[in-house]
Image (cartoon, rainbow, N blue to C red; front, side, top):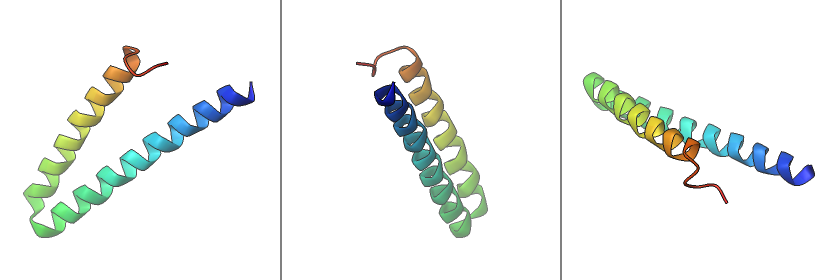
Length: 62
């Protein structure tokens, strides 16, 4: 049970780190040029959606 909790916590923290990185990238792009920030946010959301879909399909499960 402890191993399952550790795995679940790791996945949560991994997702949180990924979202924080996407947010930082979006804010940095918006400081350069406002529409570039929106483009970075859209690209990140599409990429994150594909990542979640792949994970849900079980391709990265052991």
